[in-house]
Image (cartoon, rainbow, N blue to C red):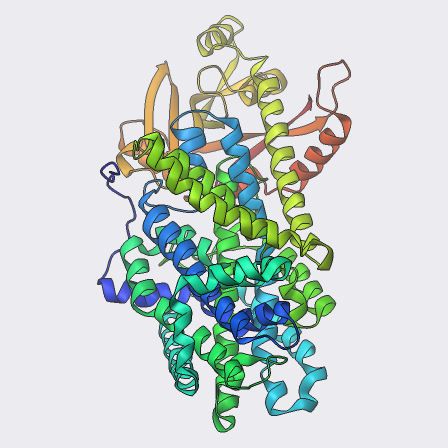
Length: 627
């Protein structure tokens, strides 16, 4: 049995029904809009004129993929394992690979899984919006040439408004998605009424029979079937926003039934003789209300895209705080929700890639050929981490853990292998994006570690430094000096540089080290510890979680309240600015890595902005560091 869950900081509060409704607008957008394109993609892979066995087999595969991957793996298992309330592959990586014990291989697996999410994240807005707008082709065949330009306009507008945040309209996302799920369920029931025998596909034997008898074609179909669960990882990653219970209620009570009915209705329509060459989803809708359905579908896909973008912002912040990405400017767009943030660099890069995919692939059918390969690999890595969690967190015996995780691994591996068939048709795009993100993570972490090691090599104990200050009669000037440093024991290098060049130092010194724990949040009582380590010299240690943003001025206010007589009106912050160069002697980093890290360092957010320091109270001291 799982260990007792710890008390969760910043736990979501509110009535269960309200939280579940809110979760519909954030968590289920991607998986909820997949009926727009999934079944058509699957049936296209079966051939020009799919047989009844192929249709029922494909539908059965979709239904049981939803059950096994989403209901069993994520909703039932993964959401029972959290890092102080937070889920997702980065939180799981932090829990298993660093927090419990240092294991580099788990860290690398988790980071690559996160990088893969970025890869498919650029495709989601493009394929979702295109598939929604393509419904107009049924109503107005002449509208075809305008689908891509209109999709580009919508996507540009979507990314352009990110800076403003979604707090003003976010409360509408849940009710809109609830309406969406009800509508697709009703349309599905209409389709099922045309051919009730389609419900036979609930029997998993239809799926197994089709896989066994279909040969290579049936195996290739798995790549299309996987599109029905591309949003499943979001259920786990967004657990910290709403908690597990609201997500489970929304999934079991509305989302899963609606999806099954929608897919079954589409399959029934094809079984009754409707063509599968165009958008099957919109064929379920009476022509008179088709424009309204297109509008609703477009809004739903925009909400789904918004969730992907917000998730990219949140994951970027986690990676920054964990030390695996360069500091980027993070803007809080609302005071009401910590998750309401904006990361400009990620937003515009994601927009450029999404627009390139929209214009380059032009149709949702074409994008479906590139979609799913990255997230299927992420899911495979999540299964590996879940096995470790079963053994170490839940303390399951090896046999049941291996049987359950092994079964999930086989399913995930089958989907990964089937999706690999997409590489030549565009599947290389998310893999290249993931490789680029992963490279940035590794270069930054390696370079940052090398700089830290180099700085610590010239450390001086604080007692020895103060004796030198007294012995050399260094001038002491009125006021407080705050030195930010990575060093937790010795004198900050920036203080040594300051003494070397100015030959004077403030009368009162406050040395502050900020660390990020491998938990999402740190309790207020554990935030700051302060001690006087020498006459008029104070050392503070501040702790933040990887979901928090450090605010140094606020820390000093807290320090003043704990008995440290820091004068907030008369203090200066001293920070170091390193210029990175290649080491002349052997043993340093490769030249290409030094150049890449130096580029990232120059273009990262300034430490003043990262720690919210007042610019007019900051003194920056430069130094060249060879790594």
